[in-house]
Amino acid sequence: MKHVVRLRIGPIGFRIGSQWRGPVAALRRLYAGYPEPEGVCDFTVRLEAERPWRRWLRPSAAIRGDYVLPDAAPLPLAQGLLAAEMGMNLQMALGQKSYLLLHAASVEKEGRALLMTGHSGVGKSSLAALLGERGWRFMGDEFALLGLDDGLLHPFPRAVSLKNESLGLFDGMDPDRLGPVLTGTPKGRIRHLRPNREAVARMGEPARPVLILFPRFGRDLDPAVREVGAAEAFMRLTQASTNYVALGEPGFDALTRLVGDLPSNAIDYADTGQAEALIARLWAKA
Amino acid sequence: MAAFLYAADPPETIRMVDLEGLTLLYHRRSGLTHILAPPAPQILAALAAGPAGAAEIIARIGAVFEVEADDPAAAIAARLAELEAAGLVWRT
Image (cartoon, rainbow over all chains, first blue to last red; front, side):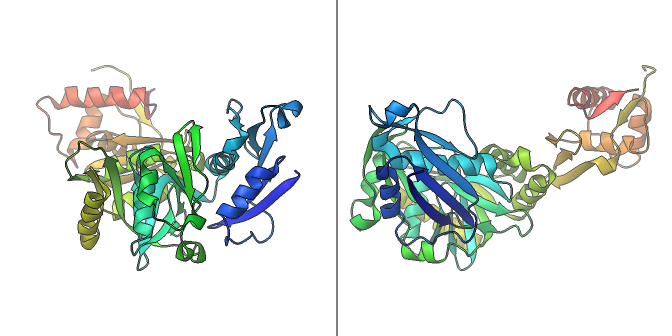
C-alpha cells in the first residue's frame, strides 16, 4: 500500500493502508495524538480501487483486509474516512477473539463503567460523546470489549461517528476535533469527533461495568425507565454481540457473569437532557 | 405411556446458569445457547440419572421439584417435546 497509518485504539493495533493519499491524511488528522501500536498490528485494513482504472476514474474505495465481506459495496473516495472506519469495525466484528465484542457505547467514572447498547439510531453514540464531555471518561461509542477472564470493560475509543441530527449537538466543539461532514453515506450525514485527551490518554485503562442501559430515543417518547430482567438482558446482549457464537463457552461465561451481576434498565428519552437526568438517577443507585 | 425412553447429554457436556427463574444453557457439542423455563431444566437434571420414560421423569422430578400445572403429565410431555425439538433430549 502506498499510504499507510498505524493506530492503536484501546488494546487493538490497526494498520490502515490506502492507494490514495486522502483517506490516510484524513485519518492522521482525525486521530492526531493517538499512539502507534507496539509490535505487530492485530488487524489490517486496505482501501483499494475495485478495478485498477477506478483508482482514477470515479474513484471508489473497496474495503479489504484480514477479513472481508464479499458483497460489501465500495464507497466513493470522498467517503474514504468512513470506508476506513467501516473497515476497522469489520475487522473487529469478524476477527476479534480475545474479548466479547458488544455493539455498545461505554463511559466510566471512578473506575466504574456504564454500558449502553441498542440498535443503530437509539442515540448511544451521542449520549456517550456528550457524557464524555461532562465529567465521564469516554470509552467507546461503537464497540465495548468485555474481557473474557477479568470481566472488565476495555476501552475502544475510536472517533465517535455522529449521524444526522446529532451533528448539531456538537457544533460548539473545538473544530480541530471534528472531521469533515460526509454527506450521502449509507447512514446519511456523518461527522466524526475525536474523543478528548483524557479518553485517549487513558485508553489502556479498563473499568468494572456496574450498570447496563438499553436507551431508546424518540421525539415523541415520554421519559421512562423499565427494569430489564437478567435473562432478557442476556438475550439482547447476545444479539448485540458480533462474536458471541464464535467465542463459544468463554463468551457464555463472560456474558452470564455480566448480566447476573449488574442491574439492567431500558430508558426512553426525547432529548439528551432527559437522558442525562435518567442516567444520573440510575447511576446513583448502581 | 409410550414405551420409549428419553435420554439427554450427560451434565458435564452442558453448562447451566440460573438467572431470575430462567436457566441459560450452553450446549458444548453444538455451541448453541438455550434459554429454559421450569420445568425444562428439572427434566434435564432428572435425565442425568440415566434414560427414563415420561412417568419415571415425573417421578424423579417430583422428588425434588413441584410441577405447577393442572395436568403435570401433559406439562412434562409438552416440555419434553420442546426439548426434543431443540436437540437437548432424544428418544432411545
